[in-house]
Length: 407
Ligand SMILES: NC(=O)c1ccc[n+]([C@@H]2O[C@H](COP(=O)([O-])OP(=O)(O)OC[C@H]3O[C@@H](n4cnc5c(N)ncnc54)[C@H](OP(=O)(O)O)[C@@H]3O)[C@@H](O)[C@H]2O)c1
Image 1 (cartoon, rainbow, N blue to C red):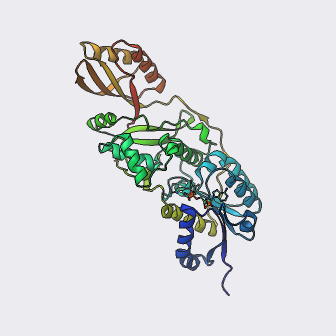
Image 2 (cartoon, helix red, strand yellow):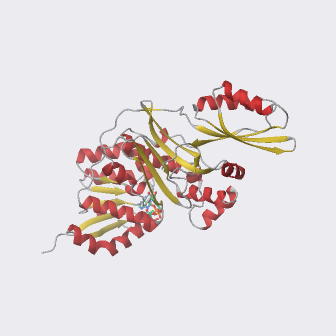
């Protein structure tokens, strides 16, 4: 006698939901061969078909691929209260209501899997939850938004921001309203989820300061090339001075950093720890079939009794004033002594210079510098003083520089 099918209630049948249903159909036989039960979709809910109660009734697992926080939150809580395991790809939900969902999953002894909510097909959630569960993580750097990585890659090849965004929209990498991507908010949601997993601290989307890429100028890319740097939108979560810093910001990387070569609409995450030095994983961060493949991995994990929800959170202080090296772009009067004056103002705030590119522009000169690592507050104080100086001709621009290189 064959075993009962494994019944999956599917919430949402859009880009990812329909790709998931198709992939499940293709792979159900192989999953049954390995796990003994055949996964089947027992009910589907969309805006126009099905009811949640019918979909939940008799389901072994609820897979949520609707997006948005409500009613997705309400449905997942109801499913877990009914003793049903759940899988979700919903970063908004996990980054804003993760603790409530994890608490309820622990209380009811059910599984909550969410691999596809961060970095699409890149299995970073599993890496942190299972493979590195006993490894004290020091830092995670991630390129977790494919849209912005594509735009920055195009800008590095000479496009303006507007041209690169239009191309991303034409190719389907950017939505008609790209604001969550280009502002850094989408990446911030994913970094909140990763930080919770890596450091066990309750990090909420609203705790993650983020800067986007809208203000970047093509000439920043040109100078960066001269200085041997490439520009990425980076999410960082790191342990520092007994606290935790989680943030998203455009950053320059030297060629030796594993994320510097990640281009186009790809995602990649570097995990650093004393015991492992670093592990980098990269792959497609979005796309219906790619994301559905991560969702299907979660389904198989549930069928085989995979990892429990993360342990209750630890209290870790969130830090704001984080030291970094900085790229500094200044337009100044082309007069003798100006470079010395800039260096003096920076030096008085404890900011020292690692490299400089200087260009004459007629009456003005452009100074592009990379500083050594300084507290961000010192750099901001120096910038405020420079902005008031009579020899500075336009608002100074700064971008963080990540100095680590491996290998
Ligand atoms: N697309 C990607 O590449 C990607 C990558 C990683 C993660 N994700 C995540 O995957 C999830 C799904 O994304 P998607 O791109 O597949 O979205 P989508 O194409 O907009 O599909 C959403 C589906 O959910 C249904 N739905 C939405 N609100 C509903 C409601 N209130 N009640 C019932 N059904 C509702 C929609 O119903 P109708 O069909 O009736 O409109 C649709 O079938 C999101 O959490 C997203 O962040 C997506």
